[in-house]
Length: 300
Image 1 (cartoon, rainbow, N blue to C red):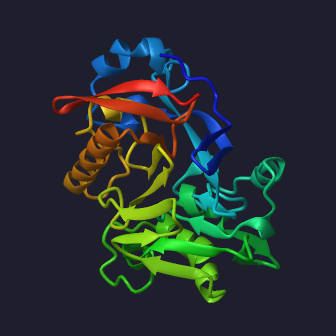
Image 2: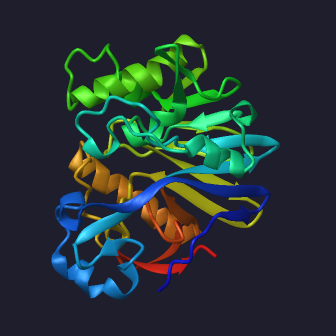
C-alpha cells in the first residue's frame, strides 16, 4: 500500500481540503501506542514507512492538520492545530511554537473572515490552538464570524468548573485559558452533547474515551460517506490492533469501545476514515474480517 499525498477531495457535494500545520517524526512508536507490539510495526514496514513510521529511529510519524470542508455554501474547519506563541511547558516541541498556518490556510483559499463553523473534535492543544490569536497581550477568536462547536463534556472537564481536576495537567489549564475561554467571552461557542447536526451533510457524534467529550464528524453526501475521527486513531496500527490506545487516552476502556464502534460502522457503511494525525494520504478505507479490520485503498 502506498500513501500519496492528498490535498483535496470531493465527496458528494462537499469539498474537503487538507491544511497541514506540521508533519514529522513525533515520538517513539510504542511510546505513542504503548500496547502495540514491535511485530505489528515491523510486519507492516512496507507501507507504514515513511508516511507513518521511521524504522531506523523507531519513531511514529504524524501530521498536525486541519480539514477544511466546503458544505452547503459554508466553510467548516475541523480542528485548528497547535497555534502560535503558546505556553506549553509540557510539550517542548510546541512550546512557543511559531508557524505559518494562517498563510497555508490563505493559500487554500480561506481567510479568517470566511470561516462559518469551527469544529473542535476535542479539547487538546493540537486541536484548538488556532481557535485564537494573540492581540495586545491577550487572546481573541481567530475566526470572528464563526460558530465554534465544542463538546460540552470536554468544556467541563478541562474548564475551571471541574473542581475535581480529573486528568487535568498544567498545560490543560493553559490551553483552556488561551484557546477556549476567549471564544466563550466573545459569545461564539456552542456546547453540545450526544449528536449535533451542522447541515444536511455533516453531523457530530460523541465518541468518548480519548477525552470525556471526544467526537467524530460524519459526512454523508450523495453516495459518498466519510468520518473524521479526531484522535480515535493516531497511527494506522490502531486499525489493525483496535484494542491499542494512544498514550493520550484518558479512559482506556471507553476509548477502545468507541474506536471499535466507529471502525465497525465505517467498514459496514463504506465510510472513508479521516483521522486527525495520519500522514501520507491522510485518509483510508477499511474492511472487516470477522472482528478484525484491514486497510483498503488510501484516499486518491
